[in-house]
Length: 257
Image: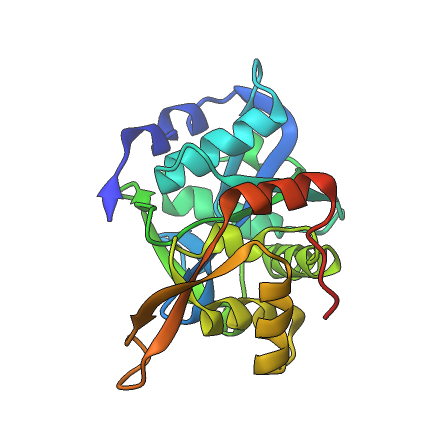
């Protein structure tokens, strides 16, 4: 795990006057797929016990989408990320002011402080290729991947943000390129099916799933095998990128599950 100075915005947080767009924050649900498991990236301050979603704030001269891409790039080292805004979280009690105060004091920032103001958060989700990213953090935090069904109780409403992100992908699963973005260039059909099963929260028939995927024309069977699942070899597949991009743009990338 590396350290990136651009993530350390402590000098901004210590300013008594808010240097960011007031009352607006960004929270990102970052999905990655590794060793047959769909995971979500979380971080927390070392001086605090509560995990949370990676996020940040919008600079005064910055577009909101540009801010989200900047935050994700700083965190993952990737410049091209599938990132989608999916909801605005604005409940009056979405965070605990006392918890915020404790976090600030634990990291040595005096209160009162502009971070104790009420914030509404713009929710984004990102789909990243686990094999390509390099997670960056600073010396004051920990960053870890968590299995989707083992997410602990998080800061504020961040569990609800994750639930909403998953439901958003599920409702648009016929158009969201989850396999294309999450998987490496070569993958097993089991990998692809597990991703769909995790998002849909139900089992899918193995043979029917493969038949439907191959029928799209953009999932291509290779003359290669993988033995990562043990002694039994598994056939490898890949995406025909041109056909996939055409299907996505034309609205033809559709499967009923």
